Every structure is written in structure tokens, then in C-alpha cells.
Length: 207
Image 1 (cartoon, rainbow, N blue to C red):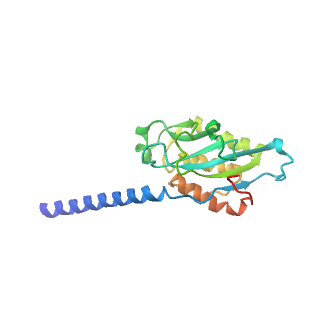
Image 2 (cartoon, rainbow, N blue to C red; image 1 turned 30 degrees about the vertical axis):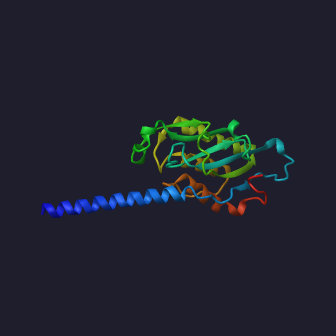
């Protein structure tokens, strides 16, 4: 009996290790492939640009995380920007665990989160993004999401994380959003692009 039990344990351990290795290989390849083209969604009431004093914009972004493996990726916002130029000076933020040691516990429990300023730093590898043009009022409502996340610093992966933060901003701005739950940041932005592809402008988001 003991020998059979040991064999079963060994088989389960081998299967688990094989599965983890297969997943790591898939993740390491899939999330480094080129992303689809970014899109530009114009949610302004006046799209002619005549009311430019009230025009606002931001970029919903996802990229590999700022670590050697890029795991598990990061979602963040770049405020007052609609193009890739001079992003090193841009105002950007994202909701993250308070420290690297909190990442694993955040998978199964609440941990303390912080709002990371200049979130773009180190988080541009395999960048994917959506440019959103909108009026001043919805823009200010979207910016207020930051304050709410700073008042309640609970971070829980798949429940209240960097994707949740970006998704709440997208929803308030007027984009079509998907239900919550665990999703990799790059997958989330890809999903958001598909949901809002019919609203994108004829202009290229890279311009």
C-alpha cells in the first residue's frame, strides 16, 4: 500500500511540474508576441475639435511587468496623452501590491495596495494600449477613481487589482467593459479593444 501511495504521489508531482513548465513556456512565448494595433476611441460630444478647450485624453495600457520575466504583467493609465512621444514626462499611475512579497499572497487573500506613480517606468515592454478622447466632465470623473482606490487600499488579484483600476476608469469614461475576474493585463486590453472596435475612429491611434 505504501509503495502504491508513493507512486501515486510521484506521478501527481511529476504531472504538476510538467504542467507548470508547460504553462511557463506558453506564457513566456504568448505574451511576447506582437500585439494587435492600438485603437483610438473618440467619446467627445463634439468631435470636430472646435471645443478643444474641453478636450481631454488618456491611454489605457498593458505591458510586461517591471521584472526580468515580465510576469504577470501590468495595467496602468497614462493621463493627458494620446501618442507615444515623450511618455517619460507623462502622468501615469497604476494600482499595485505594497511590495513584491505581497504578490503571491494577493492571489488568495487581501493585501495592502498602493497607487504607483509614474507607472510607465519599466512597464513598456510589449506595450499595448487604447487611446481615449473625451470631454472634461467624464475625464474628471475618471480621474476621481484614483482617490477612491487610495482611500481603500485593499488589493486582491482578480478582485481588486491593476486591471480592476483600469477597468473602472474605462467604464466611467464610457467605454464598453467586460465583467471582472482574473485576467492578464495584456489579455484585458486586447479584450477591451475588441469590445470597443466599432467605436474607434478612422484615425490611427499611433498618430
